Length: 348
Ligand code: DAH
Image 1 (cartoon, protein in one colour):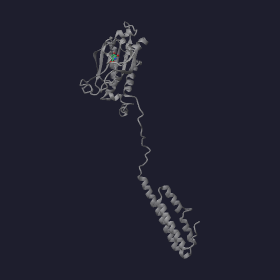
Image 2: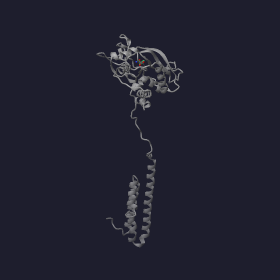
Image 3: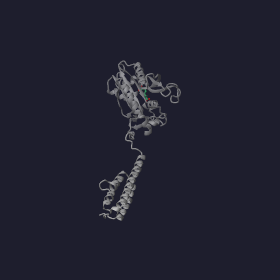
């Protein structure tokens, strides 16, 4: 219970108390809510403590009312200005805080994507698919016969040397190329055959800027009646123009593989210097992108296909090297690293 105010002294001391407490409450308000609580407590229309002083005026002796009224006005205006001062101060601190920008895009994290070599394989498969080719797969652990013998390698061929091939024992080895998939397909399907065989191959190669002991290859094979070198050349030229650009120049150079006759290497103009000559193409302006040739009759016969009736052409390329050209990579090892700073730039 607050004591009644009937004398000027009581009025004076209560006015002092409300004045002091009110100023303290306003200046100590930490935020807008606390300030509003203080305003209601001291200046509220219904129960504000200032009303006590207003009401008490009538109970004072008439000669004391004038002074008390002046004091009431003084306390009230002091509290009102303390309130608005604090309000201004709190608003300006709020304004200096960084604004919350709800339109700002969230920070996203790269969620992974297809490897650059996979992107290249997908694109090549897409082009050949339109020409009627389908995808065929074979095992990475192969027999010597599929990897070499059926492909017309003579038994003493240097590629079969222990220094060049990973042997697993019992005549099994890690395939050194995707060409054995040709044989497996020819054994299982009757012509017409048009397949692409992507997959990993393994060689006892050093791991340096241009070699890796395990890498991807992409094999192609078309076998039917009446297939000639014209089919090989026109299809591969079409492919190069689709993949590298309509005006890309290509050339075929004679070569040798045991499983093709005749054989040819296919070059496209260097994508980095556009044929002008740079360090990537060793100044020639050309990049070798694949080996190719007419399927050797012995390969068809080894797989049980009548080589008098059917002919075919084949190719083998390294999608990793093509990815290097496409993305301008200086070192093939980037492709075998899981460094997301590199992968996230190229992957989709
Ligand atoms: N198998 C060969 C290699 O790994 C690439 C190759 C060349 C495949 C000519 C072919 C071909 O199908 O016709 O080097």
